[in-house]
Length: 252
Ligand code: PGA
Image 1 (tube, rainbow, N blue to C red):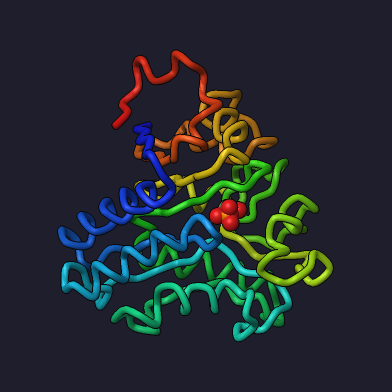
Image 2: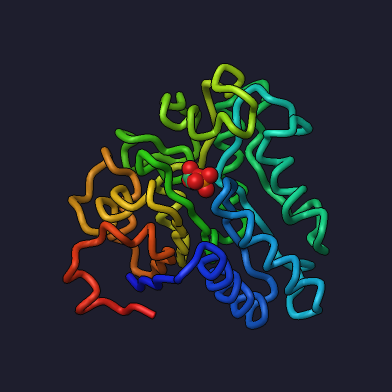
């Protein structure tokens, strides 16, 4: 695991953007795993800037998003499909057929989950997966207690997660109760992972996930087992890490 501690949230986003930039320059046909949420907004802003300056292109990039709410239209202002279009896709040259986001309105959710897993496999797996972390340690919408062997599946969202996302909907009552998410197995099969977190509210969970026991009760703790994990934190999110942790870890 490599950990970068940035001074600010903005610098955290820029560092992640730089890693993606390097990758897309070297391998323009990368398959990216993408995330939504407040942590990702500046990251996508930097990627759009890099695209506008002609440094990177998304023409040959394939994307798979982690998750989507169940039961809301793709055009809903809080859908993750809409989020991706607003913050990234509509500004860059990605081909619509290369964008994959689970369909939360699918008639047969089991079939949808299976076909999402198959699509990831057919594209040769995910080269670089971007992740945020929930206040409860979730990755994607894999809530505490999710077995590590899960592939794409439908989940019941916890109250913590629904409350954390209420801002996007106006009120907690309007936040869907279910979502469809890539499983932990899909995430762990990615060839490399960037985990991003900012702010003091995430600090205890970040420390628990990166230095505590590896347990399904803290879904992000499984990432300790990934051979190509880069963690990018701002100072606040890193503030609960054990004092001696960085002595022998790579920090920039
Ligand atoms: P956030 O969400 O970026 O909005 O904090 C992160 C997550 O829940 O994975």
